[in-house]
Length: 461
Image (cartoon, rainbow, N blue to C red; front, side, top):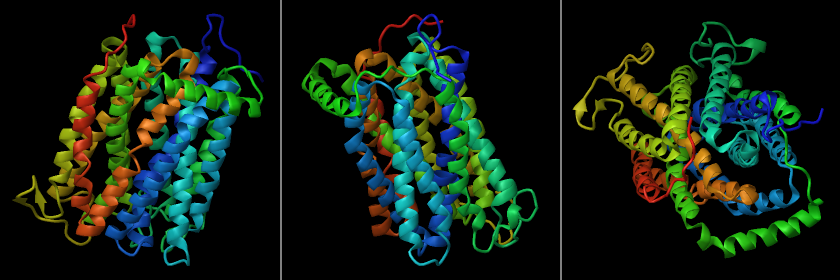
């Protein structure tokens, strides 16, 4: 089946549905592997200790970010010259799937498990991020500019729901508390999975791969792609020529560059915040997969609501005010999260820690951590969704792939520095809390740069 655009030049309902479902397909990698299940499992059960696990995870995230930063603009330029984006999505989506499958063999105490986990996670991140970059570059062909905010916000919301469903399935049927041997629903893990060797957590990698492979199909079938213009070898040559031209005339796109610089800073903070949130909670409160998973479910619910409301506000107020408001909330919530420890709240107020065999979030510090985390979830969706909507309005249509490559670059150029800084500070201080604290400034700096961006005038519904 060949996907064709609707009569008005944009995608029809099936094409829009296919594009939206990409976020559903890709989100389990970020929800299950990067944030709520596999990353905390790696830090608490595979790495020598939680602080070392956080440091190693930071270095792996930083290495993946550096690779993405170096390759994104060039690949975007080549894709622009060649035309279609779907072959690139298939290639990097396949890389993500293969890397995720390898996570199954990252077992506690297994020889080489630490290195295998780090390498597979880094390769999976590279594949997932590049696939997302090329899917984003399809946005201007899907809907007109006045509907980009709603499209992007709905996509993020659909992705959050996909992450929520995959997380519920993992917690309810696969991942078990190693102490009790039971899942969140009170059953033994499905398929005879062994809770002692953490097979439920390890299965999140293959599950994310299978999920992506199945649910990305409608995008390939129904969402129209750009027509092929050049064969690959000519596209590579023409792509680099176009990239040099874009860089050579970069001063004419000063407004876009200011936005990309802002995105570079605040996205770095977001990436690291989500990458280490679960690890921090596992090390600070001793949360197992069940506590982390329930937290992830709650966070996903608020993220879904935030993305939907953010998309609605985007189409009425414009993406810039939505991003600025979301960053302000993120900065405040991040400080509040760091103000909570195992036996204190708001930095200095003593509080009773959880007792052995405690119930779900039975201490005041845990409940406050959850509340502040939910605030982060509600603000993160609008920031991410409106950022790609703003770029789709700012970037020249004929170079959209290059600019989304630069967008990915701006989101990754310092992303290796942020997680690496977290890893270094954690390794030096042996404190997870001090390691995370270095991220707060990224949101404030990003806000200051974004305030200088001149948003385009778009007729809004």
